[in-house]
Length: 285
Image (cartoon, rainbow, N blue to C red):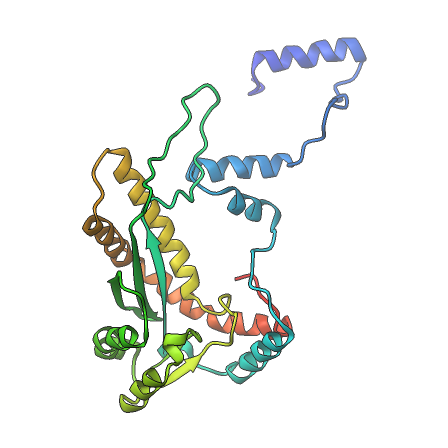
């Protein structure tokens, strides 16, 4: 009738008989850190993804700030001026690109388990295999992706732009341009000559501004998906070779929802407005 277990009803009746009240007495011991609402939310987080990190849970529960690059005053001024210069830009024809490194057996996920169960183990190798990934996307979807193991330099960068960017840039529409950071291979003299010869319109990010670049969010999502695939692969006791790992990265890139590309590109106006409102300082994006 009440919807409560009998034991709960009996406890309330006994408490009423002893104290004449149904009010709960103060609970001895250390006060609870989380409210009941936050505890329920934490339970849902773990139910949906038992490999989520403590840092991510803490951020979601307490809205703690992310770790961000240390900005000098010159960086802050440059970021603010950049945002003011581009506040009216139309980002629907902009290509966002960057490089990132993926490696097998990152072991960046924390898996939780019930007390009494065997402690989960994660096989590791002494020298994990690494692969560099160049990726580009626009509001309409992916532009291209390239996987390579050699070090990135100006020659390799120009090679990738020639094979991946130029043939596919039309997906971004007429009048496209692309964003790049200030990495040495991006600002090299030969790279600049490549842009001039091929009439490539470039917009450089201000220094120390990963929060402005939406592809940083894409890398985080992609790496999480790849690591889960690798962990599942290893749990099935299947040998993971270099080709297998690169295949997983390529598959996860191909499986990215096109709505994500649109959302990330569409966030640029919000990012710029937030930088201006924050007077050039780091934003939580």
